[in-house]
Length: 144
Length: 160
Picture 1 (spheres, rainbow over the protein chains, first blue to last red):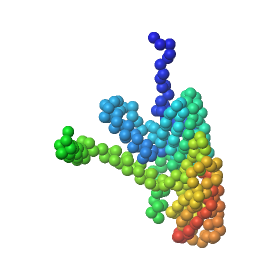
Picture 2: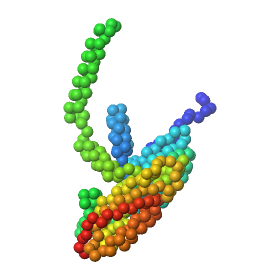
Picture 3: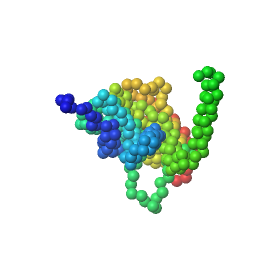
Picture 4: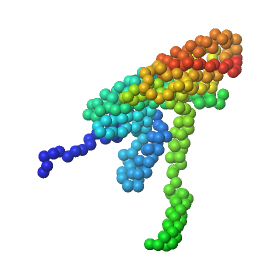
């Protein structure tokens, strides 16, 4: 038996994506992660490949919408697409998310690399629906 | 194998490949579910509405970008909060010379074009100036951009 331990990758990019998503959603002022076409098509491609390989597709989920992670040489790069609450300054929220994600990645033993944040939407935080008041959709203003 | 034998065989292979591809295109079992198509189209439309992403902060450790739509929402919110003003179509453009590159927050410029309707009897010059100052301060405070030009067009009146 060899004295050298076998090398194994314990921290996968999926785990980092999960941690980044949770960290972002726990940051004050973040409403949600925003799905993008790139993310959706990546998700579909992954599902198709798993179908072709007849692997278990139950582990494929959309919970990582808006998060892209690459891990190389112990460095984790993260790209995050978020929607923020209009009651908070979006720039400060984005900075807070970057700092929190960098800290979270450091705790895994990996080195935080580039952390890019895109604020795709700024909205009011959702409130309990009131059936008596109908708020006109903001998109309708394009037609005015 | 001689060339005159190879060419007909390659032609047959090309024809067989074309037939297989055509069959796959018509095979209903290989078509994506309509829910998948709907999801893709929904996200694609949302992406078009978002417009381009404006860089507001760049560093070696990563950057922050904000969509035109997010800034537009902010402007609508600020304008609607002003008494006697209803915001309408809004366009946001990066100022010329605003390119990617290392940049601290608060140093990128944008220009804003906003169309509004005002309540009849409103003092338009004073209201427009108030609105301009409000938009400039909101954009700086919320997204760290400088609104170098805020063009306001009063295109309609409404009764109060």
